[in-house]
Image (cartoon, rainbow, N blue to C red; front, side):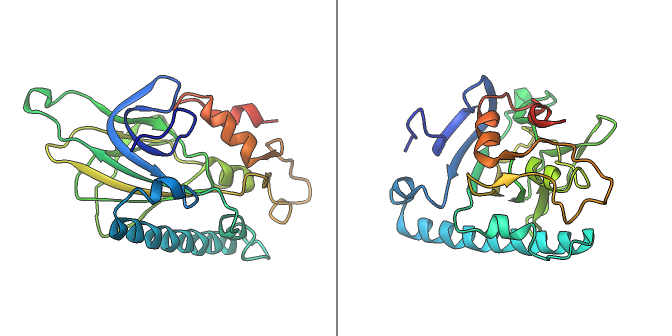
Length: 239
């Protein structure tokens, strides 16, 4: 069930994007709107995926409303309305990282290279195998202990812009280091393609300047697809 070359959705293996990034991973990338791909899946699996994506969208909105409240924004749905929009360009990725062979033990193998998520917010859940790491402000990497009973929330680039860098997108990666298969599921809550992304005026103080130029999600998405995983995509839109 491979996707056509111009379509990022469907099954992929090793190659991540079209700009030379590779990793020890195979994945299924789906959109709520990728009906052709969804209808090729077994009925029970498709129904489970659709229910999960609906539940994750709801969770994204609830988390964003708590964040807006914490930021002191008057409108509680100032952030969540973007992801909750029926036109929102959200997607879902199911990753499988194969087990590391005995002769590879001790080597640093990249499952999914370092990157930030371009969307607004992402929700990750994995099995009990390690591999996920995040980058701290000093450039060091720390491992995140796996917990199959928990959800991990990542701030995306778009949310960094909307909050004028009060929240920063999280650079993360996955190492292939386990002798068992690592599985993860990520829901990426994005804006509608035509949505304008800019710091919220209701959040900024009187004399505060915007750190970013306004752009649409489509413009940023296109820029992301043209870049390498580790590139600082937001630098193109900084003032």
